[in-house]
Every structure is written in structure tokens, then in C-alpha cells.
Amino acid sequence: MQSYTLQTSIRYSYIANSYFVVIIYIKLDDVLTMQSLNYQEFQKELGSRIQKYRKSRCLSQEGFAELLDMHRVSIGYIEQGKQAPKLSTLFRMAEILEVPLKDLLP
Image (cartoon, rainbow, N blue to C red; front, side, top):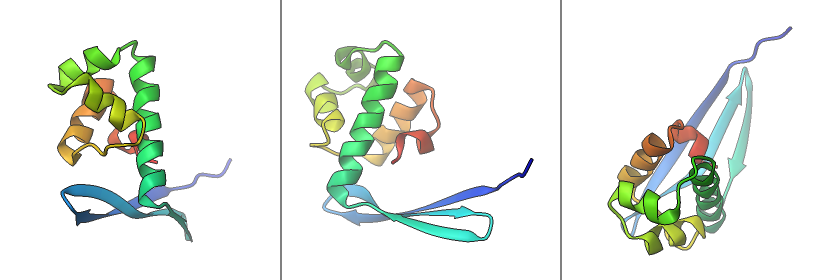
């Protein structure tokens, strides 16, 4: 059985008060591949993952928003990919959902 080491590197750019991932590098042993997402694709996939984990914890949008001290509508916008969460909010979401932050990122 072969063993592989997976290393990821995420680069952020800061524009207009929003963080977004420009490129995700995935290194599997000595093979380097690159996955490039545009901002809208990233935001939609991020929202979809947040929604999936929220539902798997049987949390309503309202309950999740309350734990995050946010409005339910904001959670809906994030899950639909219409709004990006602040980085601090993303860390808090991962904590509440009991998942590593990397699992939320596309």
C-alpha cells in the first residue's frame, strides 16, 4: 500500500473588504497541480459546502445565524453564493459546524 503526502497552499487577495482565494495549489508528493477558480465559482461552492455541513448538523439558518450573531438573511445570501463571509466569520462557522476550515473551502 502506497502512502501519499498531501499539502495545500491557499493564497488570498484582499479587494473591496472581501477575502477571496485566487489559486489553490495542491501538491501530492512531487506532482504539483493547480486548480483555478474564479471568484463567483468559489463563492457559490463555499456557500454550498456551508449549507451542506449546516444541514448535516440539523441547524436551521435562523439557529446558525443566532450562534454566529448574524441575521438569517445573511446566512441565506452566503449559502446562495451572493455574499462572502468575512474571514473571521468563516473561522467561526467551521468551529460551530465542528469541521476543519479546509473542509469548507472548495
